[in-house]
Length: 270
Image (cartoon, rainbow, N blue to C red; front, side, top):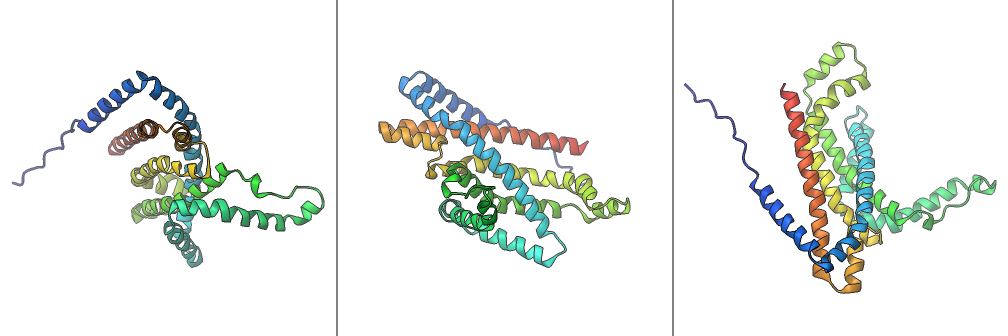
C-alpha cells in the first residue's frame, strides 16, 4: 500500500521572531536618542503623503488594470491587440523614466490638447485656460504610478480570470446568467483567490515604489529624509530611519495580507 503523505506541520516563523527582535532593539535605540527621535519626527511627516499616494494610485491602477484585462479577454481582435500593445509598451519602460516622461512631457502635451479642445468654451468665458502648473507634481506622480502598475495588474487579473474552469462558466450560462452576473457571481469570486497573492505583492511593491515620487519633490517619507540629511549631513541616521519606517509599513502589510489569504483559503475548503 502506498504511504499517505503526512500533513505539513506548521513551521514556527523564526524570521518573524528575529525581525521583531531587531525592530524592538531599533525602536528602543531610536526613542532613547534625542538625535534619532528628532530625525523620526521629521521623516514621519511624509508618512501621510506616502500612504495617500500608495492607496490612490493602487486603487486607480486596479480599476484601469481590470479594464485592460477585460479588453485582453474580449472577443474583439482590436481590443485584444490594443490591450497587449499597452501592456507590453508600459512594462518595457522603467517606472522612473515613465515618471519623468509623464511629469515633464506628457502633462504639457495633455494641457495643450485640452486647451485646443476647449477653446470655444474658453472664448465664451465658461472655463479658464489650463496651465501646466495647475497640475500638481503630486498628481503627476500618481498618474505615472497608475499607468505603470496598471500594466502589471492587468496581467494578474487576466491570468486569474483565465484560471477559472470553463465548466464553471458553462454552468453559469446554463442557469441563464448574463455576462455581468456570470462575472460577478461566478468568475470573479473564484479568480480572486488566484489573484490575491500576486496582487498583494504588487500593493507592497507600490508602497516601496511610491518613494520614486521624491524625485519630483513630493514630500513623502524619502523626500523628507533627503531634506533632513542635506541640511544636517546626518545621512546614516536619516536613511536608517527611512528604512525603519518602510520596513514597518511593508512587513505589517505583508502579514495582514497573508492572514487574509489564509482566511480565504480556509473559507474555500469548508
